[in-house]
Length: 268
Length: 268
Image 1 (cartoon, rainbow over the protein chains, first blue to last red):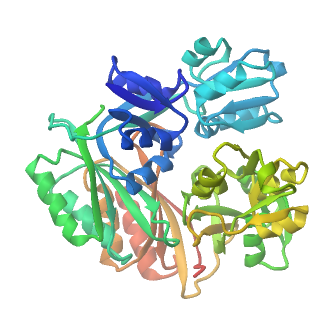
Image 2 (image 1 turned 180 degrees about the vertical axis):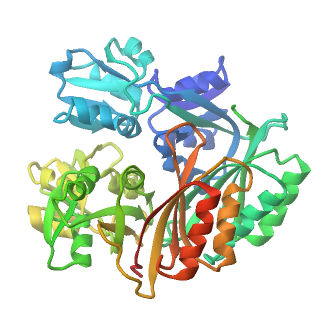
């Protein structure tokens, strides 16, 4: 089994992929888009991409790719994120800090307090930042402990994110929806017919009436005009369950577009 | 009147600030956080910050600052964004493209098609990118036409964003809520008491019952744990209107937290 994931080696995405399947062979990609395309081009069996972080919120590129392409979510993985400051040199040598933009955001307060005049350089992944930082003494990386070992960097600080509880949820994208396990989630995208008062309320009412739990609702722009949204919704339950199936059928009649992304075992 | 806005000169934020108040004196800030802090420290009368783009969605840092600080939204401005590729050198000289991360995202397809092997360098604003690009021939900037003039760059391409209709909504933050004009919006942040089925539905029901139009709903992480959200909601109407005031009072009793950010004239 081949899993596409954000590279290079040592990334949180790789950690997520291994958490989902220990024995899978890794196929490292440059960015989220390439990771998804590896699956679309049948180069891999599954793609593992981040979708949501507990500090920074949704990874909007992933949400947008779920809208653009025909993709099936077959699983989810939650990974604890513990950012470290990694460098070849000393604290006082650091002139540049590299990391993924999300990681830089997650450590905003730490950076502002300790490195007010340092240049921040966003790169495509935390592990790439570590790889690049290994080439000079004036550059530090914000990345995982694993990356320090992988690229021979010293760990100058640990757990530097703004809030110590930091988790990222990854989704596993594949081809076939797994059967119900009794603890599942279903992900959908809804476009309301008209932006009229109460349209969203009517949809949520269907879930409330059937006592279906919403675990997430997130709006994304349709990219057509300002104030026009799609809603990404996660609910508890599996499409094989009758009440889920019936509710989704009811909703389908009320909305402009309903895209079912898949049902899969819940991570927690 | 002094307006804080994202600098340097030539930024879209400055355009928004001028659209809101032609005669205001500009106070240029390095980033969104500094722009908001300028108001908190009484260095300016108003701060103008981006909150939402029609392609990329919410500017999450702005939403998070609205949660963290005591701020009053007193106005909104919508600016049409038309990104250009600006450089001193020729198309074939370009090795680095600089811009604000949001602008780089908005031009993702253009870059992937035309500059697959170019290094992308995110910086704090589009106008800063233009300023920096003016120093070398191998660096291009994605920024406004105004920035080209300001920093003496050639316009190599115009309207390079993925979709030609590209608008950014800015909010004006100040001290006092303006009176109702008859075409107003009210912005609130809601934290639901429990993440139970139907909690969000109950809130939206209050709006639907009173025929109050939701113009926006967006979830943001509480940063406490994964799956725990705040909701940023914009509705049509002014807090001075009885039905708005009464509905918000009713909602206040049902939720864990209700923060009213302000009522202000709608831009469109």
